[in-house]
Amino acid sequence: MPQLSAKDRHRVSFTLNGKHISIEVEPRMLLTDALRHIVGATGTHVGCEHGVCGACTVAIDGLPARACLTLAVQVEGCDIRTVEGLAPSSDRLSALQAAFRRHHALQCGFCTAGILMSLDAYLSTSPDPSEQDLKEVVGGHLCRCTGYAPIITAALEAAATLRQEAPHV
Amino acid sequence: MKPAAFDFIRAETVDEITSALHEHGGEARVIAGGQSLVAMLNMRLAKPAVLVDVMRVKALATISVEANAIVIPAGVRQTATMARSSLKDEVPLLAAALPWVGHLQTRSRGTICGSVAHADPSAEIPLCLVALEGEVRLRARRKTRRIPAETFFTGMMATDKGDNEWIEAVAFPKRRPGTGSAFAEVARRHGDFAIVACAAVVDAQRMRLAVAGVADRPTARDFPVLEGVALDDALNAFAWELGAGDDVHATARYRRDLVRKIGRKVLEEAASCRS
Image (cartoon, rainbow over all chains, first blue to last red):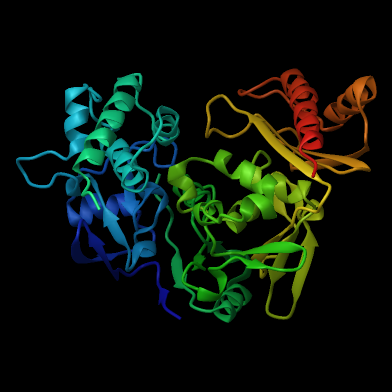
């Protein structure tokens, strides 16, 4: 049974936005800090650090989750997606990001990375959400700028866009 | 806001969990989804020397069905439990309460047993376990124990679990024919900790109401089938007995009022959906 000692760094391997990566961390390191300080992927933000604000939300194995309530050593072998993985290329936004821009669904932007990751993960499995469904998803995030209404509008529009883009089978 | 240092044991079998806890006892904590524990680690309200990760143990990853109960082991996440399509028929109370547990973003990682182990007095899953008279299945090296939920919770975030024991599973009794159940809670915002949460189970002879968020643990009371003023009086007496206190979220008086009003609502709803 693997026992990772507190004072050493241990190798953790996982997939980050489609790329296999391997880092060395102490057992106590949070996934937020591993992403930001070890990998250098600072798109994931750190707000409250106890699971309330949602700024650090990433997708773990396809489900939105708090990176600040996850130890880096827990994600060995997992598939992690962060806001850096949303845009299809450096000069093109995803449908969800473009809808956020169109509808001014962010002002200071601090909470945005987390909200995008929750909505992106949710829309991938629920392509035709109701406004209430989206309020439930966004309910796991604090935004002190927008009042949430433009976020919901943007998410509804992104869902409609994505439904049109989906391949017809 | 960073955890203190700890060793991390990635257990791969049930026996490895048991022996790790036997060796480290009160110095160790089990980590499953971590949705309560990691917040406690971050705030250094918990400073265990050893964490024992149970999420890689295959034997703990699947819900099983017994004659009268569904058994949810330590590795089953809340999202996975909600996704079980038969849950509405098997344990409709739990199916009704799970959407109120935390947020989508915490249910994706958090486990059913983890919430029971954390024993927050306002938490929905312990409330349902008490309302349904479920049991907690503990394992230690020398013995296993099955404890009725009502005696498992002993106070604010305190349980009957010994230092070298861990929760292997919890068992939720299946819905019996002729019973109805209902759940409701009041919180400032959806996803916040409940100010008061109520769960009711009603059959032809008995009305059972369990309340979270008022006493220091989820607390249930059995009544004969009552209505009208008799039910009001019984609920009022129960509300006072729970010993509500004032805090930043609500006054004691408001909490008693919620027990009377929400308690009545869930009892009536449970009675009306008996089948």
